[in-house]
Image (cartoon, rainbow, N blue to C red; front, side, top):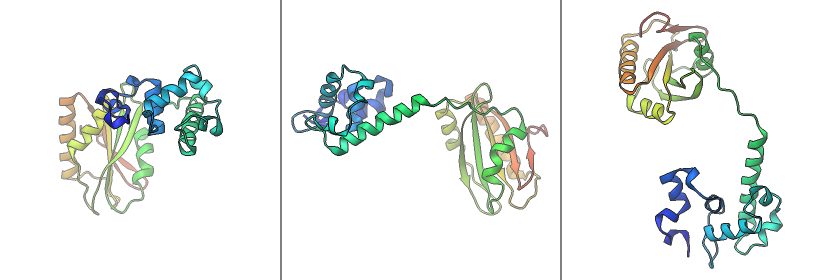
Length: 225
């Protein structure tokens, strides 16, 4: 019986989306890697059978090479390569140190993060940094790109991304291709809108930078937030 005929709770991909990756069993995770089973058994059943032969141990499974995996009925070369590739990713992940998140302490720190993305552009772009409670960067994103003298910012998209990062605060920035660091009326307006919207969601706007090729203007430093 193929996965598409199983109860929805037993479909690995659907279960992944509904309940999260931690809710999946080892055999369900392996089934997702393999993508399909055989005529005789589903991908989950095939995965369960393979894992049972190695004592349900990922380290033991990683000892099998392509030929060893292909001895299982239903595992061809493509599936064997997918399994080996996934296990190799796991091995490399385990061997790496967890990268330390960059901490933003002031406007100059933020400028160093934003500057490579915005300094040399001929049109305006709007970027955002997502921060945790310790002001360490969780991620960054280009939110919009506009014409020579404007950029459009959708607050719904901005805070949707912020909620996805579960961030505590944000910093925003956009560039002025003209080199003029003075904030426009539109810059003042969007800063106020973002700050007020953030208060409702308990996501603090820490700063808004205007970036030029060699310098920046900080709303926080100028007490404009």
